[in-house]
Image (cartoon, rainbow, N blue to C red; front, side, top):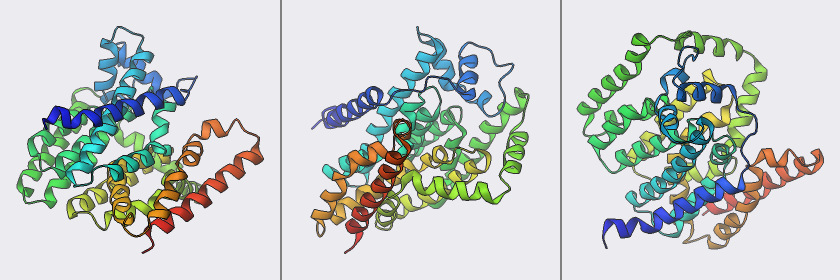
Amino acid sequence: MSPGRAHGPHIAIAAGLALFGALSVLPVRIPTLDTHAYVSMAQGNYSAVGTPFRYRVVVPALAGMLPTSPLLGLRLITYVSMAGVYFLGLTECASLGIVGWPALCALMVIFCSRANLFNFYNPYLTDATGLAVLFLLSWCFIADLYWPFLGAACLGIFVRESALFAVPVWLFSPKWRKGIWIILLGVAIFILPTLLFPSPTTYRDYAALAIKAKANGKELFRLAKDVSLSWHCVWILCFCGLLRLPRRVQVLAGLLVLGAGASSLVADDYERMVSVLCPVVLSGVAKTLETAWVKNQAMVIAFLCTLPLQFLFSSPYVLQGMPIRIHHVTLVATLAISSLCAAGVVVD
């Protein structure tokens, strides 16, 4: 079978999921401050744009070249990027030898997550394209594709600086010497624009202000709550699957966890920050489902039957329109049922 024909089903699935997400999740009506910055950049005005948005030039530049309004351009780029995320996710699983229904079901688990659906709720950001870059870097590393990884990393830094999280992975491979060059090049690409094109605020100012605002117990509690809810029961499946995956994936997971932690220090939307874990969450869940099917078919099926409920839970902007009691009951029921089923999946 030719590569094009082999990838045909993956392309169809990826495009279908992206289209379903675009049609099923209503986008935010009032653009955020982040969006205003990207719109300004798409229009060629960088003067009032501060750190870190000023250096995320790829997506606004593409939006500015499209024959549409900047807002619509950002939205279209997000939808195409999400299709790329799903395609690369299935390709990554195939590189790990996980094919067929385990990979597809794991992708559906990711699709029904809060980390995924936020991209459709606010498609006017660079998050989706940044996530696609991380999936591309993850796949290149797993498949031992050094030069494509290098190219994707260099360009990806100008999409979102989160691409830097994956850059050190080659230090933990036989190509560790080349990994040093990737790190040096990545850091140079990250720092040089800030020196040549300084913004009204620096990364240091941005980080210092954010960290200072978090130095209290209430914020730490919110961090723990948001991180727990971000993947809720999926954390269980991911962790068990990662234990069975190659060391490369485990190293990548560790670096992405560190990256998510660093991002959480300078941002207060914690669920968005942990979305960078999507590439390793997908592979971990896929491995767990593949392994569990042998002994726990009934529990795997039961867990998959909770996905519609998880989809509803992961669309908090829909749930918020419900009466508060129904809202709370739905959330608690979703967490309880899906967590019990997930626990049943991993029990031998």
